[in-house]
Length: 395
Image 1 (spheres, helix red, strand yellow):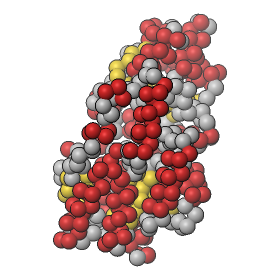
Image 2 (cartoon, helix red, strand yellow; image 1 turned 135 degrees about the horizontal axis):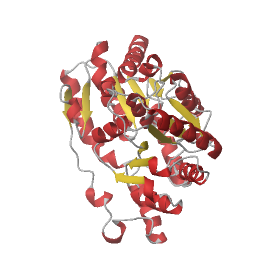
Image 3 (tube, one colour; image 1 turned 180 degrees about the horizontal axis):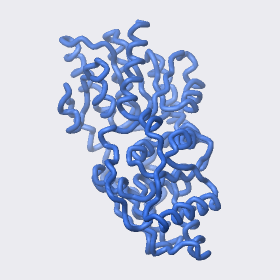
Image 4 (tube, one colour; image 1 turned 90 degrees about the horizontal axis):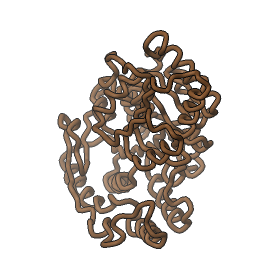
């Protein structure tokens, strides 16, 4: 929401932010900070349940799963609800507010916004950066009691919103199946800060591919890329010592297992999580950027926030995973990269880019600025502003 807040004033809006953890970028705005106790003694189970990992006993994992499913329902921020409501009520006694906006995830901000609308009669815009119980990565998909309970909560909560906002047409279609009563579902994708666009700094001397973000074994998995590069090397089409694949983010142990499995240790650099500003600078210097998607129709409407950060980097993007969805469409419209899901396609694209790198010292970037600018935070704020005006007019 930081990008939205930053650029709403350009369209005549004065944001007031209710939060428990203000970020430095919000210092210039009116911020109501409401700290809260997230019930440490509940969140952190004592003793053996404190640290549950891949090697933990199955019984312990099940107990932790059930604990999270019921005691932390609907999310860990539920303990913020009452202090946040008190602070919002105090604010609204002396402050005129034209519209309330809440963003999901997590769940609790929507619960707060619903209560404020019911109590004060202020129009409410419920922003969904992801689907709720229909999300393809929903944690309790196979646990019927929790999913049923939460689906009822979702319907009960969002029914009260004046409108819903979702990031893509396919996700809007899915959302409408559950929220049939909602006529107003607007589509506004994520975006990038136009102040964080690559200024044109020098590229790496090696043929570098950079990935930033988490991994998911079998879903967001670089294994097929590793295989493609290995095959190209065995076919003597590339010199693998020219390559450098950089990973920034969590899941280092999983990545090490993948790298060792594919016998590609020498060219993969595992950096772990580093400050976002540093990651962005590394993206700017990279010859190519890697986006990993799950190769499944569930990904059709999914925009990862990372792709917009990549757009601002002005480096060619290789998206590996599902083809035919919104990411594929975005890359085609912007000419910022290509979507691939077959090893032969990946080999062909890597060989093409590598050949260009060997002949000119860099991989060319052909992104269309006019199309890419449509995904800036400023454009996103304009579209939110238009929605606010529509909702206020209706009320």
